[in-house]
Length: 172
Image (cartoon, rainbow, N blue to C red; front, side, top):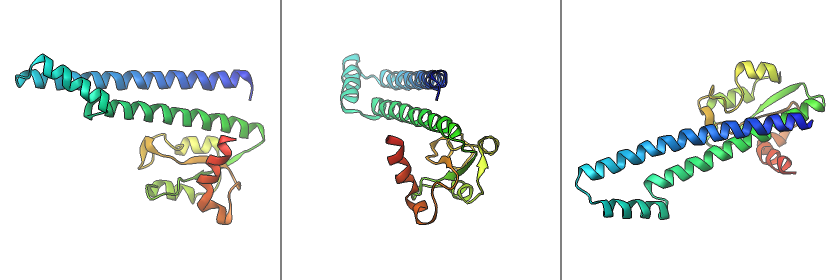
């Protein structure tokens, strides 16, 4: 992978991640504003509101806990996406032409992803037309944990353990 390709992936990661975090922050600000307005409307004092919000912040309660969870999920999803793009570039450099849909293989795997995993190997361009994992075209939407991997990498008994094997290889 060339330095330019690495920079492009990194720049895309930063732009998308920061954009999503800004949106989540704005949604959180609106939620917080509405929560405070409801407390004020019900006659709650400013000191009680302040203490309630500080406790929620310290303990990861309903308001700040959900923001923290969404922050982590956004960063994790975008790191995973950038990693997958980097792996795809490396696979293209190695001459990979066809890709298989590799499902997460868990109880959460949706029927769309199971069906796609049974499709024949396709080029990256074909998968992009059909929809790549996490793009929102499957039942699981942008929560999809599937991947596109070089065709014939996993076969036979390896398929059921493919996600675990893939994650170990990705870390190397």
